[in-house]
Image 1 (spheres, each protein chain N blue to C red):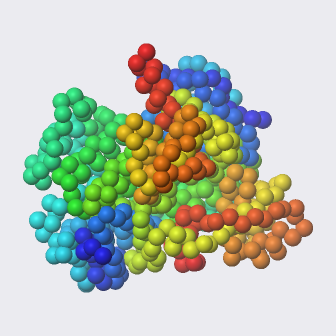
Image 2: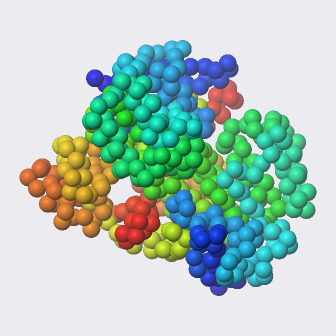
Image 3: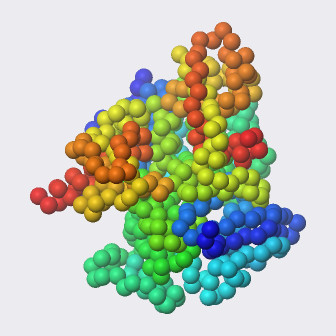
Length: 282
Length: 282
């Protein structure tokens, strides 16, 4: 059964936190929501996990006991040890027996946490705390696993462990939803959803999101003309310039290049800005 | 070559019995963006504090603008710590005025240019823009940015980068620490630390060193992943494909014998190279 949401929306006072968002979460696949601070990721994940009720739209999710949810706050009890944190969720989900103990041990070992089983949650490094949070959320083999920014601020070695846990949950058949601010993590999903001011700015498989980017992308060594500066950004020393109408920029040193996912995401956010400006002017 | 702005010459720092930084030499030159990479605990922050003149080395020497660190040299530095270094109870204009008073220079913002709320009540992206402005307004010769774009959306990240790059174009040296490999790819040079030492340095191309990974496609990625793990390999899941370092090819073929699969080669990502280098595997 595919979980997900259709046309969900939610306002906080005058702020439209989420508007008309669709998302499919098939079992055994990793889906990624990418966006910055305030884009609506946490609201969407809260709705998917059942922690928030949407004002509009429909949600399909399993029973609460079959959901694993890591909120943005990591969900780790600071005054319980690593082992106690996990025993607590085991008790809460009624998961017991030798098989669960073995699974707990295997996940802790693979995440590099076995040696710190006795340490208090509040004394873990950021990366360790996030890994423990993900293990807590997936220990009971949920049908739906919802992880709110598990990798933000985490170093690449911990990030590798976290993505192993995510892949392992998907391999066991969970439908997995991960929120992130990093575009390279969206490349690891079978499909991504880019959120911008609560709306879907792009969605689909990474290749499809790249293919759907309108206009042309140019690369050059000198800066753009002032009139086009809003559509230009830097990668390394070089400039990248998006031309919405698909035309090529003439001039020495400029050449057209194939966009990657970072470019496609940047352009989708630029288009959102353009639309907001035009809407504001109208 | 231009005189380095900041230099570590065989710098070591011990805390009691622990050695946080061992015999590290590096330099930041005018006009370049240098990326300092390392897992948590690799010694980046200790090295940064020594380079800023905030912590004396146990051995070796730090030079700032050709001399020992001093109050005069600190005035020529713009340092943005991970916590941004803004007063949350003050407005952006008040924060900027305070920094101008400390540094004795900087441009006064125009009326209406900045939000008139306390910084703590502004969105993270806006806070980061204010922090960038605060460290740039006295036109520092050396810019030190600790995880400068954590948590912001990709478009905002591009814009903040543009400001750092513009400072470098104007002749400043920029030293950035980041866990974010997309950001690291935009640096002119990279220095990778592990266990207090410099374990790799050079341009992006030099760090990537033409290394390749194997991309494995099978009808049943979860089954293949489990077989590979039983063989002691650690595949990463990307979409529905698995990735392994090229050096694992023989073990991969043995583990998937009789299982339908296709293997392609692809260039390793910086993140994959970083993990291999940090773990001492390549």
